[in-house]
Length: 433
Image (cartoon, rainbow, N blue to C red; front, side, top):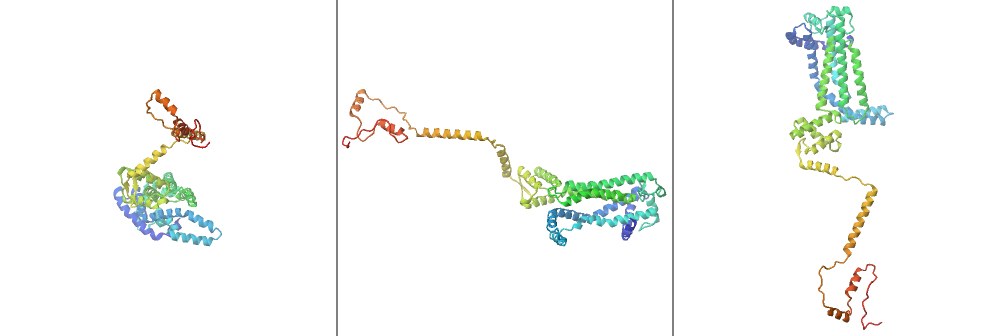
């Protein structure tokens, strides 16, 4: 580790200068020789470095998402050019160039802060050995050697001997307890940060090798830090624990406010956004309007979380616009309620026997109605009855030639098969037999 740290000795002076400046501030508050003054100086160094690395962190987030989206295409290229590794590499580089993705962007924050990490390790190692380094002169060196954090000197490590720890005015037991707790916290924070990324901010609808790699790193990284941590001085453990906690908080904020499409975090975010819209009747905030605008622009390419969000808007009576705003739409609410009512009022499905019985019954009723319609309508008006003498006279005269009698006319109307029934009309006397 000392050999690696020597390669970054060029940055030792800036790191030591920053620590000394923070030590002046905290030394005036807690005392120059206290562990709080030196410990908080290291914490402040971490915060300053991480603030400067925020643009790289944003680039890392974008690169990670682009890599997740490109996994299906990358897998297809690997399958297509399985036997031609050179063509496979060319197609991969072409894909990265077309999408503007840099695979190394996900490692930029770690690579960028590595020089500061090794420079701090070099500074603390010189403090433990009693050598001046950077802008830390003899007075500051003695002050740093006297500083203890919970009984453990800043320059002490878990593997130090009892004599070396005694030279720093501390006990081996206190050093090992403090370093062991800090190593456990450092590994646990690393594991939780990676697990949070895998469980909440990954599109679970797409299964890719990238997810398996991230899952392996979730278990491998904490083990690596635990093994390496026993050789880190207490001050370096403070540095690394602080940067892990910063990364965890920064990632929680990104997951909460800018989640990966298709992930559980996006579903939670859209549900909170839907609740805010239904409560206030509008989309509040430029960033939220940008989210709604992006979802509207997707059209039919929306994922399940986004379709559920739009269904909730319609049910609440809102319609999303192309500019990211929403309008109150009674028509949308009525259609949603009407569709739900129609869905509730659908009749139960009948069996085949019931359907046949219903059809037979309808046919019978229809036939009865047709027969009733064909029957002659009788007059309800009663004709006046004549005297017995008039009746006899009509009977003697008989029927007039060429005109059927009323009885024959009624019988003719009641016949359906074309055969005449009842009394036939008499022939005219002049007709030939």
